Image 1 (cartoon, rainbow, N blue to C red):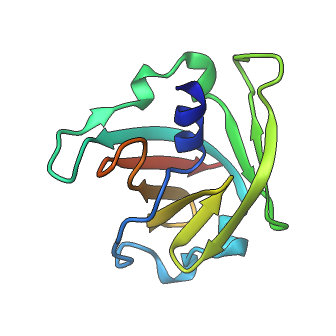
Image 2: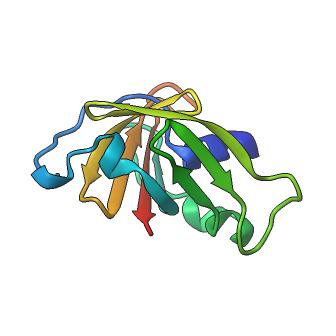
Length: 141
């Protein structure tokens, strides 16, 4: 279960349609504007599109809430367990890519709902079960 939540924290899971109207045109998501260091600040789960939102982030251990995700311009993503360390071997490396509003990281595909060069919100569906939806918010340092 922890691997599934980590995968969702890393990005989300699969594409959901979204609108781009909230995105600042000078901050269109691309390899250059997305490159940087991020912290996950929110994870919201809904069992389906009309389901009640549940705050998943608040249920994570403190050692999972302070981790960083580094998106490098060369397509390498680094997951760094900083601050409170969950385990001795929690750091990992993977790949990431962007195509339009679709972002893929560690094999997980998500749809960018919002990006203003500081805040990144990714929607994924399905997550763990058919029809469920995750909305993950990242803040760029």
